[in-house]
Length: 566
Image (cartoon, rainbow, N blue to C red):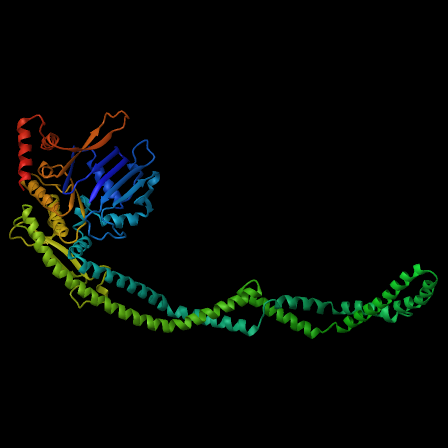
């Protein structure tokens, strides 16, 4: 159950802490005192949108926290393994700019996690939810919740299968869309890959050819220069070669070395020079002989370079990128070839999934029909206790798309059924959709009757009602109070109300009090628990009487006495 609600700097509430009790907890207060803020605080913990305008003026942030007592809780809470007896806290911190942070037991969490967790601990019924009760999707959710795990587990299985079907259908559509365009793309890929393969290019080939081209263009010059050097060193040009001239000087130096040892080094170096010049001459002559001066080869190289240049213009600025493009094209063609077999297998998979989905939708429909009969009877009984003795409540289940045999086109994410709550508040009048016939007060009581039925089946441990008494009063208010009291026997109930006929049934009564003359200069709202004479005073105020009026106090006391006997 919800043990404690803590609020700091939320609009006019600077600091408030409410310690709730098991049973029926009632919150009352004058109009404008701030009761709605308590409802908004709970809504924030259930994941509603944060608004920086809710931060108290002059403060940097607002904070709301709910602490739950898990002792005796047996219901599963989504996303959490409960340890009975351990306190569980969920909180939300509101920051400027509409930002917020969520926490579970002091640890950061996403708002989605907070929403899932808190929704398993609290069910919040406000005026907006009463209006949502008129929506077909919400009515289907209510019926499934009432049906219990048999239907909710089946619906989750159906939902997963439905998503699987959507994914398979999307993949099949992607494979089959615009097949002619895809065929043209494949033909282009085949042509491009064939062109690249036919060229037989290899990485770095263009660089090698550029160097060969340069040599072929300068072949005559290279041959002449190297040949002239070889001739000068070995053969001479109209006379002795350089080698021969130096060789003739060598004997005289060698004889001088016998006279003066200092000449020996000079003679040795000259000998080395002769050998080196002979090697150099031969190398230059060999190079000149190897130089190719071949106009035909030059033409071949230039044509090859032009072919590679064309490939680079089409497929990439470098030859390496051309080759990479070819590899990628080959992969795409292999993938495309596999697509045909994939399309066949995917279509078979989709057919199987759709058949399972239709079968499961039919099972879900049958289970819903059984649950609808039970919910009709139970809600009818609760409506009778809420002064709706002659009201007729029924649930209609129709196929979403006409009366034809159920097919995949009839399916949605929640099944193939249009669930509609029908009601007739006047004897002899046919039942009509709730959205078309219920006033605010009638809708409030239908909501309470449905919640009462659900609480006995698969409800949350704590039920929160805000303005469940809208549009009612008098004996009807008393009937609603009795129903809330009965509901509180099995679940903790928190009710924000303006009716004394409801407040008198409280196990714990809290009053919201506004102080417009606070020392801070900003209106402040606080919450205090009432007891004894304080409860009588508040009931008098709620009935529009002065608490000092003895007759009003007697009336309030009689309300409390009457509620105690229920």
